[in-house]
Length: 145
Image (cartoon, rainbow, N blue to C red):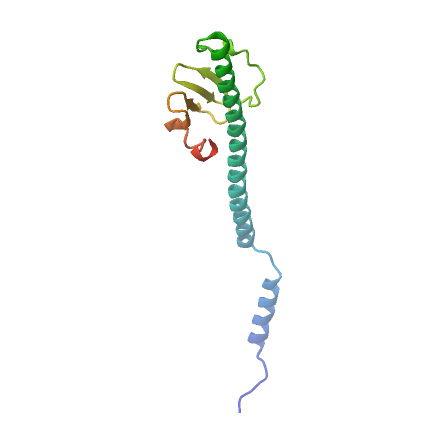
């Protein structure tokens, strides 16, 4: 028959294991910090994208206002406006974009969203919105009508 009486060594090991069970180690702390960091990184990028989208959508409303004012100017004056100041528009929703008028487009430009200048425009010949190639990382085509 085998001896079922525990030895001193096995009792000592059990005590060590129970002591470690209740301790919070540095590895546990690092894992928690890593998980929290990943969560915040993903959450902040989604929130930043939603913020950019809201700003661009407000700016689209401003461009539509400019287009309506251009049509009104064409009807009343009989010729096209060549400068945005001729349209007498002052109340834009988006304070982040600066609008310019060219013979082929109404251009919205910003350097408030990121350090590098970003633009999108409404093409007057094709009658549609477009995003400049260097701005596609911040402004998505799906945000434009």
